[in-house]
Image (tube, rainbow, N blue to C red; front, side, top):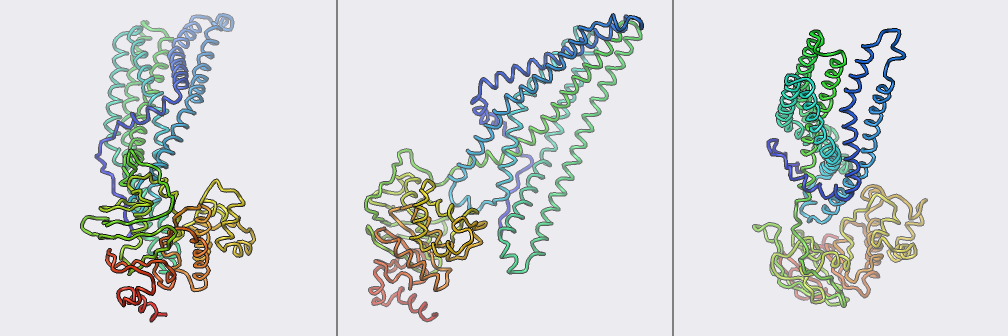
Length: 594
């Protein structure tokens, strides 16, 4: 059954502390931020000066006769008006250019931080995640960060300053009434916008959740394309997808209607304020207390004040939406991996390759023990196989050896060094694995092999291909090693993928090798070829083999038999058969099925 993402509570308060986390990214380019702010101030001063230049120009035109206009119009005022317009635009462009690098670098830094953090999170997180929804959360989060960085710092504060300047100028030049109308309308507009935006944030989140779920459903179905075809479930998948789309459609409709209510209320406040201002100005002109230039100035200031005010409402709405979008992003960063290096963790030094499991206890959940008092040793250069029925805990040993999980009790040591006291990076660098299900990147065979050691030379990569008995297959392909393997390596057969995995491990050159049921899904011919390759690769290496088919590990130096999380027998193949115990029963069962 596919897990669904847990819905976000629409009433959850926005975490304004996010700005604290974003602040360091602004400080990376202090000079750019300062210069951009100066450009913004210059643009605002030019913007506030425009209505005054317009007023004096109109008044001068109104005082001249028709015959004298061409001569008497103060050309200097017109040039000044054009210059201020140009400065306003140019300063805005320079500001955006300067600050553009700040936002782009911040998006890069945050994106990289999230990517690295996701790789640090434990296996449980990745087993339960939905890739499609996670991808959309990251995409929307980084876009939201860009918006916040640009508009919160360089628009909201300066816009409020501009409003204060305009209100002050209106009060000084035209009295209390004009300033009061503007001030009252600004307060009403801002209050209404904030309340209405807070109310409709839940609809924004519902749309985002529906969008993520729909995307997750589509990607999950497409990744399991073959399974859908095998079970003839195209209609079933389409119905499930359509159900998610219906939820998305409903959420979008609610969001659209709530936006209509918000925009309608804002438009009513703006229209009422502008009508009142124009009526008072027209009355003043009619009484002779004001000139035509004053009327034009009032009109220009009213329009000018509501343009940034309207933008302020938009910015606030978008900030609320952006904060809702980046919540998941920062929640990801807040997640702590259950497996982490201690502060005094040391690099693992493998001198011999001796592995010891000492009274290891482990459980994924406290009420379901997986391993119980598991103790065995793999001597340097020895090949040890672990066998048992499904669910015995064999593959869990591999996960513990790689420290995807930490043991509940007991210790695992390599050359006397406890894994919990060593860094995960140095540990995993010392171990190579050929897993049961080899997943390849959607790249060429060559690059998938090179992944074992990205800095390896071309010669080393080709040598690894030869040692893994992959050369004959590679040479048979039209594009050779440059053949694309498809998503997750779906263009290759199971045996071919396993040989790529072996080549990748050979290239890594680790002192310890792990083979986790590497041949369980292969046919006899492919299995023999893979076993031959494994035998060659294992020479001189300490090897742990998790096996299902007992015939593949009869040459092991020691075989550990597990049952329900416990070791019930240990010994080589002949010794265990002579004991006529659990191993013998497994052997006879498999032989009888051949």
